Each structure stands twice: as structure tokens, then as C-alpha cells.
Amino acid sequence: MSSYRNSDSRPPIMQGSPPGLVPPRDQWDRPPWNRWSFQNIRQILPTAEVWRGAGPVRTLPRAERDLDQLAIPPVEGGAATLAGFLDETYTDGFLVLKHGSIVYERYFNGMTERSLHLSQSVAKSVTAAALGVLVGRGLLDVNAPVTRYVPELDSTAYRGALVQHVLDMTSGVLFDETYTNPYSDMGQLDVSSGWKPVPEGSDPGFRWPRSVFEQILGLGRIERRHGERFAYRSIETEVLAICMERVMGRRLPEIVSEFLWAPMGAEESASFTVDQQGHALADGGFNACLRDYARVGLLYLEAGGGIVPPGWVEATRTGNHAIFGEPYTDTLPQGAYRNQWWIEDPVDRALYARGVFGQMIYVNWQHRMVAVKLSSWPDFLSPRFTRQTQAALHAIARHLA
Image (cartoon, rainbow, N blue to C red; front, side):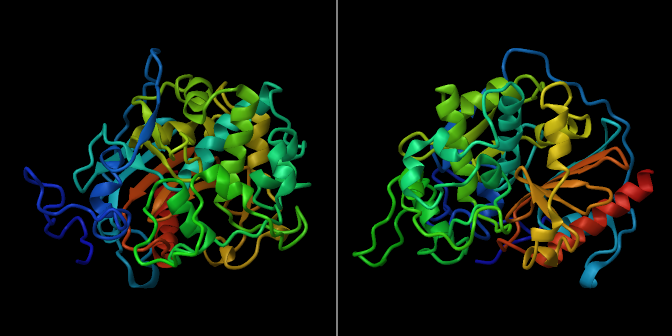
């Protein structure tokens, strides 16, 4: 069964009692099932709460503009209006803040203001924001070797890597990020994190990792010197999460709650998916509502908002563009990567938090704008959809200037 856009009729996934169409356990994140599952992770996987705390919600004033018919560049034959773009790119939620006020907010595909949506790799940037708070309080040193915090890594390819190398994904550790190969390191992470069962009919002699930490301890090969080049490795965020947990003596969901989610005035409690050891999937298992993702972006726009250290935000915007190459330059030709965020270019230094299947937080200081797009694309990666999204965001920024 193929996926469907918001303008198409919706198949009755998980409707009825009992439901007739149930996402297969090994395909829940693939089309068309992800159009339902990304908003209903707690019905699929075990999760741990990221409590919003008992404090007040940070108010987001409203200064709404009707941008539905805003003209956007029709990238590679795509839609020429914002409304058309949102439909074409399988959008579940889209929000734009200007000077901290909501100017545009739309929900589709059954999503509501309270729906928690899977963020995929936007989770990396959320985790890094909490880590930045720990760094600012002197609890963690980014210039220290990761083995200071996790001595077991001395027997892995992470020996000699600094925390900053891991933050910037410039460790030389070999990790195959191929999403469609179940035997790749990323495919194994699906199993070790509890997202997927061992693939049916897989090689009975293959040893599948039983937890995320066990998989990390099995990474023994290095492909280049630490710090030499950027290469996207989702497992790096898991290493950071374990460093944070060792420093604090607590699990990641509690750390993110205390140092980020509650202080920023989140509207809803969030959640992480967890493996069988209770390890929260820091690289992609975070779930939150649309406005709270925007509040994360707003913290960065406001130089940390009194929560994340201003120096951490500035450092995040200052990347080494010389070590950022293909295939990443396909969608960010002048880009860089720093502290688990993507930098658009070395001039404006706007930031992206990005996740597969179309998740994004965009922070633009020049235009004092934050935007969030939550999606359920039919493909892990779509350079065309990514370029369309960037063009739409730039058009909105110009229009609101």
C-alpha cells in the first residue's frame, strides 16, 4: 500500500475495534504506516516521560498571518504556494514564529496541538541543548576524552576521541548509516534500540546487539583520525547521552526534563523511546508537540533564553566548513555541522535541526524567525523535498521581513 498526501483519502489505519489495518511491527516507520505511527509512538514502543514540570507554560503570543497562498519558488517542478508545498511534502504540523510570536500554525493528518510527534534526528539537537546546559554548569568538559566519562570506551574505536569530536560527528569511528540495509550499523541500531525485531529470515549466525550500549561497545574499527572529517553517525548521540548519564547519575529523560524541558516552559510532557535496558534513544526517539519544538528553536534564537549558555549557542553556529563535504553539500552547499546542529552557511549561520522523513527546526537570526516542520515522508531522505523546504522557509522569511 502506497502512502497518501493530506489531500488524498486516508486509509483507516488503526481505526475500528479491533482495528483492521495495523502497522506491521517491522514496518511501522515506513509508508504508509508512518503517517499514523509518528504521532502514536506510545502505542508502538516503550517510552520514558520527559516531564514538563509544574511551572508555567511559556506563552507564545499570536500575530497570525494567512500565508497559505504565499508564492514560493517551485523547486524542481514542486508546488508554487505554501499550502501546496505543505500538502506535497506530507506535512503533519507546520509553525512559524517571528519575534517570538506565532504568525502561522497548521495541523494536518489528524495531528492536533497536543499530539506528540516523533522527531527522528531532531532528537540529537534537543539532547545537545541539554548537554550544553551541563557544560555551562561545569559538569561536563567537551575537551575531555569520552573515556573520562565512559571508561569502557577505551576498548573501542572511540579511544582518543574527545567529547567535542563526538558532538561534531568528527570522530573517526566507522559506522554505516545506511537506512535500508538491516545489517548496516543503522539497521542494527533499529534492533538494539527496540524499534524493530530481528529481521525475519536473517542469517542465524549473525549476532544482533541486545542493547544500544552493547552495540556501542562493539564499534571497534576506525576509518580516519579523530577530528579529520565530518561524517554523519547517529550512534554518536548515544555516546553523548551515556556521558551525560554517567556525570549526573540519572537517565537521559530526567536530565532533559530538569535542565531543558521544564525550565523552558514546555506546553506538554515529551517522551523518549527506550531499549530493554531503559536507554533512551537520544539520536531519534524523542517525541513532542509542535509548539514545544518551536520553543527549543526560540531558546537558540534568544541566545539560550537564560537556560542554554549563550556561549554554547554561539559555538553551535561556528562550524568548520572545510571538513564538510559530499553527500551533505547536496542540500547544504555551504554548510557545516556543530554540536549536533546543521549550519546553513558561514554568513547568516542559520541553524537546522533535521530528521529523516521530514522533521525540522529552523532558526534564523537575521530574520528573527523560528520554523518547525513535522512530516511523514514516504522516503527516509528526499533531497528534492529538503530543497523545497529550504526554499519555502527563505520565502517566508523574506515575506515577513
